[in-house]
Length: 330
Ligand code: NDP
Image 1 (cartoon, helix red, strand yellow):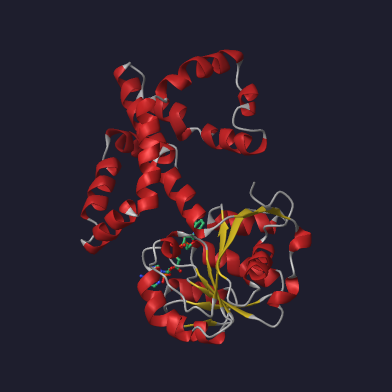
Image 2 (image 1 turned 180 degrees about the vertical axis):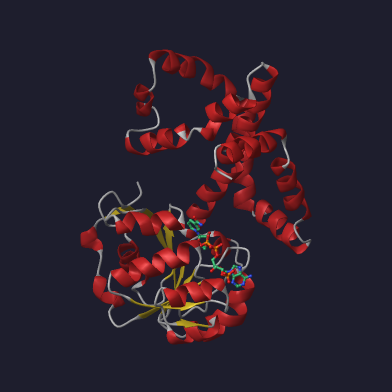
């Protein structure tokens, strides 16, 4: 059973007198920096000099080039997109880490696949909110917590877990409705990629297929899109899953709907789906997916761009553009 931490497990004094450098003032960086500052921590920002840099300055943060911020910090939170972090880490961050520093990541990917390797005398911890950056800030502003996975990869000081928990506390993990769960870089990588490679991606493609089938069945494009996702009902159902439970939220639907879902849903999950899920796990564990993704980046993302172009110019996307323009959403 995974350990679920309580506020009483947090030793806030481990961050006393420490300077925290948030490297990358983006989705996660901005929210985590703001939350940590509100909780009384000394936070500086490291970013290249552009829009994000100006935003950090506007928000009142002392802002530096990334290497300078790393030099000034005791705790370095590397909050760059996973695919850009490794060369920046090697060039600007790693040379400026000193014994006893902590390196903090919000995603397991780069440590799992050895794209980021910290010096042995530095703590390496995972503090990974299961929440988009905006949510991390907005929930905490309403005094509501976020779910956060914490893990330790390297414990050079003997205090790595304490640092991770104190940071999770400062970000808002222990506020009401938050939850801080013990995990690891490998586990976070596995669950994150598994979701993307199985049901989350499948969900998008199945909605696109459903759109085509409904049109073929004589439904208008507008009604199809609103039914499938445009109404926002999916968001409400997702919220009910989180609060009531995956199956218990069914009671919010009509009996006809419940009967239909229970008698038809399982037919779509056959042996082939099971085999695809096992394959996804095997490819994540073996590093096969990472090798493909790394090679794709080295080639300049041709497949990525082609697939994105395909879906963005699909009949569904065109119908959606028209509908959303009429609804004032574009
Ligand atoms: P963003 O895409 O918001 O980018 C973060 C920062 O990186 C930006 O400030 C951006 O600054 C900078 N940046 C981007 N490209 C470059 C580059 N080539 N060189 C220098 N700086 C660059 O990242 P996220 O906040 O989404 O992700 C950060 C980490 O958090 C990742 O590890 C991610 O996996 C993790 N995470 C993200 C979640 C999310 O919902 N987004 C959820 C949980 C974890 P600039 O303006 O200069 O481009």
